[in-house]
Length: 129
Image (tube, rainbow, N blue to C red; front, side, top):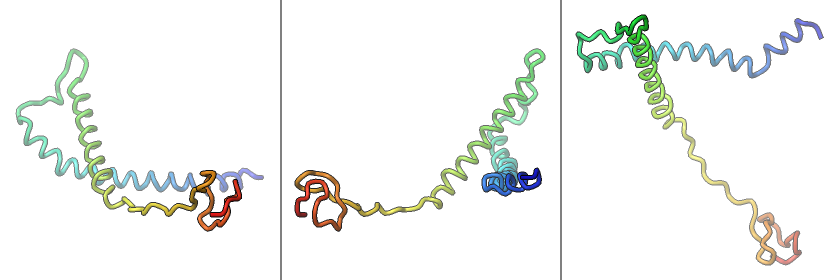
């Protein structure tokens, strides 16, 4: 098999195509989440925090603690928004109400072995059902 054919077979595998689609959709969804956080959530957070505190500029020696704290807070806020939107909100729409499947077998009264519902005789003990 030539290198071209092997590469074509690799690209056409379902998991590679699925991964490519997931990356593109994930990038688009990241823009939506970032816009939501920047436009709605962060103004709410800044209204709660005092305006004169520049906590993102805090330093401890050469360590920029405020930058790490800011990135951590941003991550937690984005993770919370994703959890609330994807898991809680959209999860309600994605739930499928599945009725429990009807049993395919019944129990033989003589030997207590499972037998098909339509059976008239037990295949284990040959008793009449």
